[in-house]
Length: 426
Image 1 (cartoon, rainbow, N blue to C red):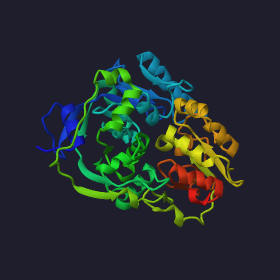
Image 2: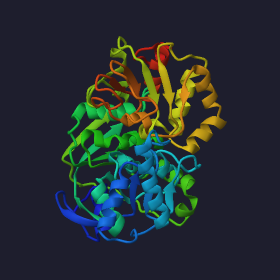
Image 3: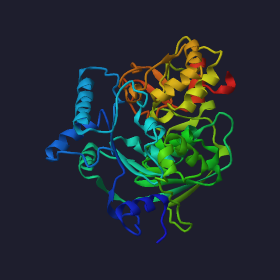
Image 4: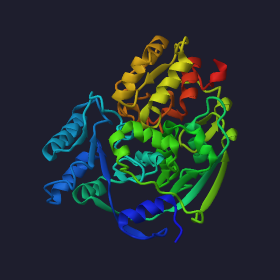
């Protein structure tokens, strides 16, 4: 039976020769991920199950990133709960604040060489779908499923249908993967891929860097997708050979390719030349417009960072555009490198000095403002251009505030201009 990339990964991990959309299966997990918000409730359920040890100390991943550094007593207690459990269980991949390997979960797992092609990963965070950029199947679950997965190392799935996104052409200057995924969400809506797999292909994928692919897959959930996934190519292999040379040399991964006659519920052809600098206006990621059509929208804050756009390429792009310029006097610009490694490399490259000279606030790695947690919460009536992934009502603060989603070039330009803007205006 012909299968897509996703279906092949699920079949293999379920020990089946083939699967079809709608099948209910139980599959072995390569990695199980939790953070400081979702792991504490999972730990309570884990303990109620009467289980003494996690299924594999090497394959349960725990990361402090949402409310770190702790913003209040409640967040400190959440962090303490996970920290103590990780120590008791001897969790190998526990990531604590300030360590070189630490950072936002969906930035550090690829960059630390943990997730590889062919892996099956679940995480109690909806943006776990990020790792499909590496040719893996990854998706988000709730804390109850996380608890059971920590105990057993398996979980159930309904095999998804797939939408094929066929990419051709090249991006115009300053256009990035963020503009691509915002355009797709605007095209099909926030439920346009509900419980389906977004499977990318075509010659156009060469136009996307690995950081760009990670951004695209990260936001697959914003159109309802179960996962997003890219085929493995030379870009992928070069990336994983750098992040985990030992595993790469041992060929500790598996490349899955879709069958030529695999069935898709929909095929969407996109010429990257047609993608413009794009923003998503309040209050849905699907409320997209050309950035150039929104130049009358004044702003109060800009956030550059998050699991979507806090990677090294993003910080470098921000510094390149901002060099010699100043943040508008009416704007607060917050830059959050996605990991300690990104922070240090940006520092060594001189990028943080450029951003500091421009008048930016530079934060330690954290999810912080993305979920309205801290380090950039908005007051009533304030408007923010953000490289994060959601702009729901009250997402970044007061319900009377507004978030406009964009890629780094638009966010940086807006910080300088004091309104939604584009690099050609600078």
